[in-house]
Length: 192
Ligand SMILES: Nc1ncnc2c1ncn2[C@@H]1O[C@H](COP(=O)(O)OP(=O)(O)O)[C@@H](O)[C@H]1O
Ligand SMILES: Cc1cn([C@H]2C[C@H](O)[C@@H](COP(=O)(O)O)O2)c(=O)[nH]c1=O
Ligand SMILES: [Zn+2]
Image (tube, rainbow, N blue to C red):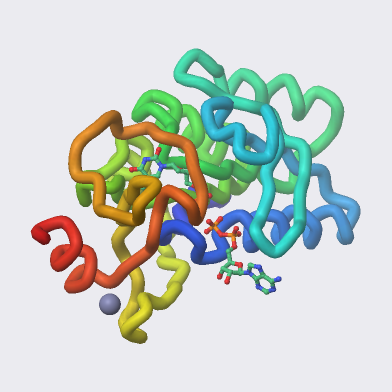
């Protein structure tokens, strides 16, 4: 039986790198994959997955209106799918996570989701909350804070490097806008 996986981490932990390695692995074995990424996350351009290590791939951009299950069904008409890979899974809606579960359960295709657990205020993203509730396998991808502890939190910073504690949940950016920290150092910065 195919499974729904949620690989979660803070920013800059290697999520996109691992996704692209998995996609390559399937391709090496002659298996077709379907790649999705959030349309709003246009750091590498619309519909592109990029990793800081330099790997890149084209992906289907999704927004809240995208029918992921329908797209997978259409794709299986052209031949079997080895797996579905979703980057920036924190931007999924809960109904879309339920669609991904149907891809596993009804089409018997594994779905591997990669994304953030929490936002800059340490609140769950909708997609992460749904995946934490519904995924068969939860796996943390670990990265480290400047102190050597595990970096689990995402601090949003302004141009001067000061902590930002208010604002919209979605704000696209990279290492210039966010720093991954352990909880203790995250709290030190947001309380300062
Ligand atoms: N040239 C490089 N060589 C090795 N690792 C790198 C290089 N550039 C960035 N990285 C590492 O890649 C990781 C970030 O990968 P990425 O897939 O972009 O992360 P995420 O998708 O989780 O934000 C970081 O651990 C960073 O240290
Ligand atoms: C913490 C946080 C992040 N984001 C955005 C910033 C980036 O565009 C993506 C995460 O990218 P990565 O592949 O993990 O490097 O999410 C956001 O919109 N709001 C936040 O609170
Ligand atoms: Zn720390």
